[in-house]
Length: 312
Image (cartoon, rainbow, N blue to C red; front, side, top):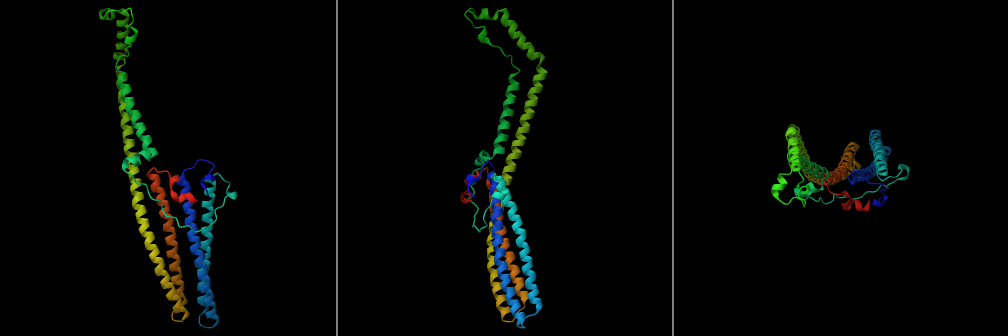
C-alpha cells in the first residue's frame, strides 16, 4: 500500500495503528499455519501408531481435538484481519470490496523515536501550541482592559497651524470640553472597567491552568510511551528465548513419543506451549509497534516521516 493511495487527509497515527494491527495478525496467522501443519503430522503419527497397536484411540482423538481448536483460532484471526483491512480501506478512501492487502510476514521494527528536549516536544504538540496561544491572547486582553481606564485623546487634531502657543492650546474651550468628556466617561464607567479587568485576569488565570494541565498531560504521555516501549522490547526479547526453549522441549517429547517412552499427551502439551510462545511473541511485536505510534504521536511528531511506512 503506497501513500499515494490516500485520497483524503487522514491522521497517520490512525493509519499506522490499523496497518500494524493487520501485520501483527499476519504474523499470528503464519504461526497458526505452521502449528496446524505440525499438528497434522503429529495426528498422522498417532494414527499410524494406533493402527500398529502401539497407541490407543485416545491419542488420535486428543490430536484431533488440538487440531480442531487451532483451526477455530485461525478463523477468528481471519475475521479480525478483515476488520482491519476494511478500516484501512475507509481511511484511504477506497471501497472495502475493492481494497486488499495480501497477507505476508514482514519484520517491522519500531522506528527510532525522535526524542528531543522538552521545548521541542512543546513546539510539536498541536494541543500545547493551542493552549499557549490562548494564554497569550488572554494576557493581551488584560492589557486592553487596563488601557480602557485612560482617556482616549487625539492631540494631533488640536495641534494644527492655528495653535501657535501651548497656552493657546490649553485655553481652547473645545479641547477642555473634549478632555473633560473623556475623563468623565472613565469616572462614570470605572466600575464596569474594573470588572472588565477582573474578568480578563480571571480568563488569563484559567488559560494558564489549562496550559499547565496540557503540558503535564504531554509529559505523562511521553513518559508512558518511553517506559512502555522499553518494557515491551524486553518482553519481546524474552518471548523469543521462550520460543527456542519450547522448540527444544517439543523435539525431545516427539523423540520420546516415537520411541514409546512417553505418551501423546506430552507431545500435545509441548505443541501447545510452542504455539502459545510464538503467538505471544507475535502479539508483543505488534504492541511494540503500536506503542511506538503512541510515543511519536505524544511527541507531536509527523508519522508520515517514519521509515516503517515507506514500504507499505
